[in-house]
Image 1: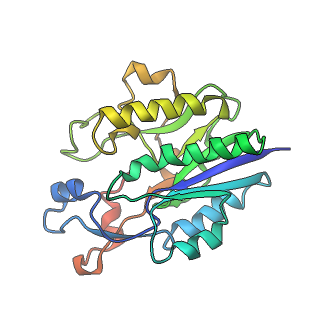
Image 2: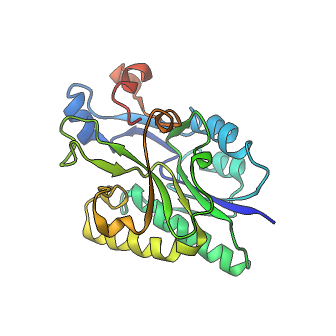
Length: 245
């Protein structure tokens, strides 16, 4: 019987979030760099429409996030097999991928389950189509990710380079152990967030990833859902000009 695991990770709700302030201070210096995160705005409906409702395969959901005033509502909606709440004041949101995969690994072992694939996504995404359709499910020895060009003028040191996005991952169970080890190494050796966004021309990572470049088709699959706080008075349409596509 076909069966898949889906990991939903990161912030599902956070007011006045300041996580991307370095970007906004560069591109929007008068905006303060704060915005609201709420999975109910776009992720809830588009995830159901394009991911859950487009396949008859049995799906086990896992969640790695931070607690919030609406966490119980979110858990009741997705009814995860396992979930973990992390304190993002003590650990980085990016580490939710590693922690979530540990949940899946433990659950599948304890219940003698072999998943066809593991799909990892984030709560702060808006889907326009199903990215799984672009992945080759026959690839069993590599993790499929999208790679996209850095678009922002002074975004760290990555200007003009391609980086592997951490928006979605398609992970064959055969490489989950190798991927967890890779994440742990990069977590300890790099600054916040970059452990998931390795520059794609680094040869040491190419044997682990099946890289799918953003192009005219793939760039219309996903956007990051970032709404500025009301006090900043910036519309989501304005933000789209600066969004990662």
